[in-house]
Length: 263
Length: 265
Image (cartoon, rainbow over the protein chains, first blue to last red):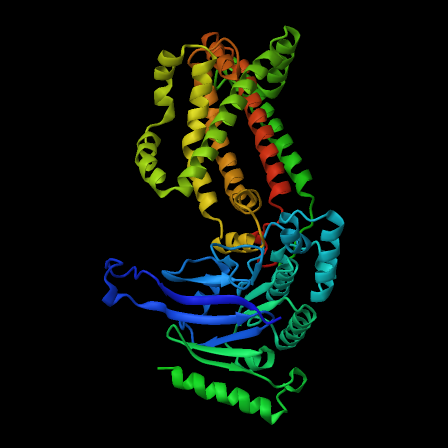
């Protein structure tokens, strides 16, 4: 069922430049972070967004999440039946800086979503157990975030996002702070969860070209607020490893592309 | 390497208090002999205990404490509650903050006790003027702590709560309150000292019972031992209330990591 899950239509977004007292209406001087961006994301796609810092990829993610509002344009969800007006539980977000609630333990953090959704107690316990064992932190159930290492916190943040069973997962460089081994485990877990549920669509920001080619169905490269490349990766996921020349060629292709956009 | 001497800190604290009382008694006994000061003006701990017993016997001990306790609780509670409500909205609305900030700054620059005679004229010599003074004294500094607490909330946590499906109310109870709580409890501890000074000032200005009243009344009759008793009771009452807040703090904000544990010694 390849219906349109996220439809980004004619999005314009700029931020006020606090250093200059110019008014909003001074259109000639307005610098758009996103300039007339269109993007159609289909159900069960795994999209990786690549681009240099400041290219607008985080802004795009924040717009889809509903944290910020576009100047022009709109974002439609679920085949155009819903419009993004603000953050909601149908779009789970994993932040670069884990954003755990420091006053809740590991299990309370993971249970936050199901709890505010007023799920039954046994069901919440089941969900918490499932995701705690997925991230391998059973021993730290009752620990507070301040007692965990950076990588552990990030894993809890990911489990918390998964626990809500949202149709859309928005991930802003979720694995960049993890050590190589944990990153690889989390990547495989992410693919497993995504593969098991045909109704999960993922938008994943990364700085790592290798990671993008490893995970994505579709890699989108952004530069200066525009999409400069939108390509499908059709290679089988099992064959994506650094000893496969096809994989390396793909990575190299994106590396050259990113170098060219670095003006 | 310097060796750490292992000791029980509770034992040290108790010994410290006992030593203080003993030294005080010895000083008094020495003064009784040497007559540096009229011995009636410097009663010792034994004399103070005798005074407490006499208050207990004529039934005025607990009513005086109760009178002060009720005043302090009413005034303190009112001050804290109003500060939390006002501070919350001031932190939320920049406009309200800009409107109230200069006014609160103006009133904040006036020592609250300067208003005492005015409050008596407005609210009468009875309980109302006393509770008003205590509440007012607590309110002004407390607002700052509440505003700081509400503003301290990490916007990323609000975002993540919203994305997990939390409603406005749930964001308030599950994100805003726990973020602000450490600041509010700290403010409550700091303001408690001001609350108590307001209590004593209010009771000195015209009351017929209470710990502050005992002090002014004792002055008229040179009952220095009564004064000492009152001072000890004020300290006890203050310490009890403060410990209650410290206890609540340890229960409610146990998730916080103390920076003092950063480096092992």
